Length: 121
Image 1 (spheres, rainbow, N blue to C red):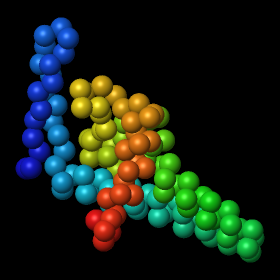
Image 2: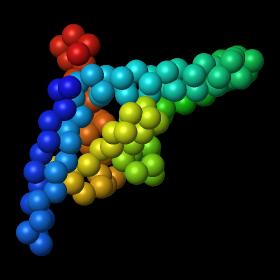
Image 3: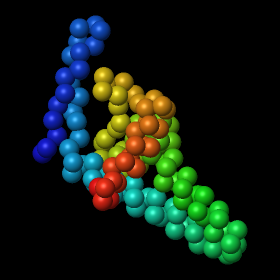
């Protein structure tokens, strides 16, 4: 209901209409991705738990990688969408409508940490 359209002119003189996602669909996609990440980290936590302190170290490395690289890897290799975004028909694009590239996706997801300041969103 809060989605809006954005007109993007192409060099050929054609105007493309891109529909921007609203806050509700973005939040639902984030929740679905959170569920996926929690399921993966829980499964690995159970498996690595039997390895003691070494397993705990591997678990923390995996958790860090999953939290920081999951969105970027999904956006680059799965047509601009994490599983949560894909299930809601969303995808990440540049402002001109072209597919997101590695540098832009990586920067976008690293700056997500800034969103947590000053008080967790």
